[in-house]
Image 1 (tube, protein in one colour):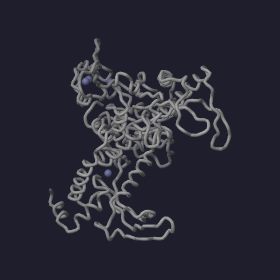
Image 2 (tube, rainbow, N blue to C red):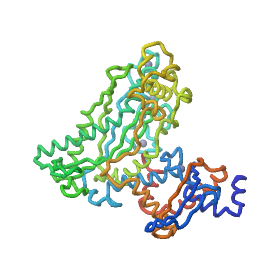
Image 3 (cartoon, protein in one colour):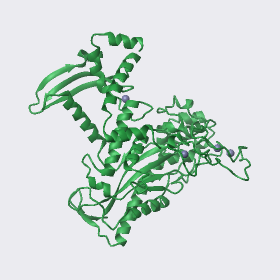
Image 4 (spheres, helix red, strand yellow):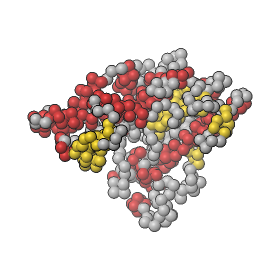
Length: 506
Ligand SMILES: [Zn+2]
Ligand SMILES: [Zn+2]
Ligand SMILES: [Zn+2]
Ligand SMILES: [Zn+2]
């Protein structure tokens, strides 16, 4: 234990401090708030108690940062992953207000990938015999074997005969950086959310048309504005995560569940019997093949870029007879990826600014540097210097009289290689909300604290800073939190979640 920690632990207020910081205990970088907290009686509005934070240990309240990313805050991301697991799982099996009958709705787990933007080193195992995919030691096929190998126009070998280990740093790296289309990839990342949105609409359209052909009647419902209208008898609810591949293209894992429509209530009901999981499967394949987004014109490519899905989408059944893909595994898999961003590329970045971008972007640099450069270059304000011989540095600074373009988001999301979406998203109807889980956790804590019933706590608080005051404080608070968490880790679901996150395949 370090000297600062010993010093803190030796003070008479130490146990009070530990209790005071417990709510943010495991957090790597809690927020410190100062101000006044008041207890208010809900029936009368009378203030029954008041507390100024300068009477508290460290003259502040500690609040966990709540960051979902494991690389930023392991503890907060653990809490987030637990919530993500519950959100996904309740949509599969019911619970927490979602009816158990959802477990009998047709549902598939689909993976949508990006197309190729150039040849990269890869690892392909025809048939896995390993126990855990994360520590796969199966013998892979040669990377990019070609009989007439030769070189590309830049003199780089066009083939690779290596059998790459799973942790080989070359995986996901282009065979030739100059042949690779970095611009197309960041644009694809940026517009992948729109591609997904239209694909999901197309899935629903396919199913609606199928209902029509099979004579399954549409349902008359009353809309929010009071008008009656007829809607298709099936809806698709989804929960999905974005996962960044090693080559830094995003792909999506989505649970797609078929729901029915109740004409009278807004309840979750099973779809009509005439539509099955095979129909859902076929609709996903058809939509993924059919939907193509052409992006708006850009001075560098006036016809825009084509954004479509890559090789055929992978669609799998859950809880099928082979038992390979269970609801718990799928939920844990999605929860795990919900706590990651660009980490699989080997790097993680914070938001870039004109002052910091030159440290990361380089049109002649490595794969990631070129992707970041493409984001910054394509996302520049448009309207002036594009055709002139402006230098890269001038492009990076942008011109004062230029307008932000529809591609401006590429700059904002350059640290995510263009992807500006959320890593976990779900349809409103899919499951419980994160807010509900947070509220029930807060209620549970309040009950534990044995607050006076009929009283709410209000705060007038301002931000005072981030992080623990010393490394010693961080050590003490984090250790105490780890011990408490260990004691809390009970229950079948949490165990399943843990087992999958730390051990089994991925
Ligand atoms: Zn945190
Ligand atoms: Zn290779
Ligand atoms: Zn293997
Ligand atoms: Zn080349």
